[in-house]
Length: 167
Image 1 (tube, rainbow, N blue to C red):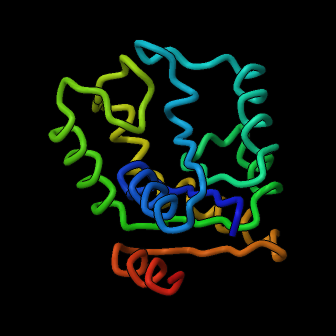
Image 2: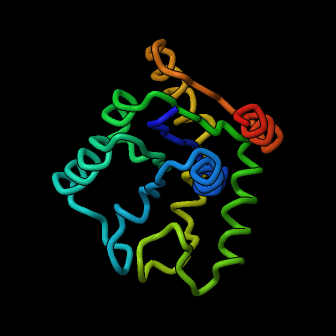
């Protein structure tokens, strides 16, 4: 595992898993939210965003966490390992609410500068609908990449088992 992609619903723990894997495997981590969002929650223009991703995937090793559907196929093709956190909706909602409380008025360490933690109805709706609307398409897409190491983890216990098995 040298090029690892971590995807899943907001609040599932993608960034936390990325950090833990980076420590365990000594591979650099790229939190995609920190690259996509500019100060004040301004999105990176699409052409520029594609260039950012191309720059990262050209490196010898990486761990990337984040969804960003516009570049997902590009990242999957270059990854040797994909970890999909396919968690229950309530667990993800709990995760985003907990994160909002923990980082109230602050910017998370895995986020771009001057993007203080926020929680709005649009994001809550996205998290609430992820399992039914997005997860099936992701599972279907991943099934087409039989030459990749694909791990679908469904809860925190499975993450812990996965990390223990890497040692």
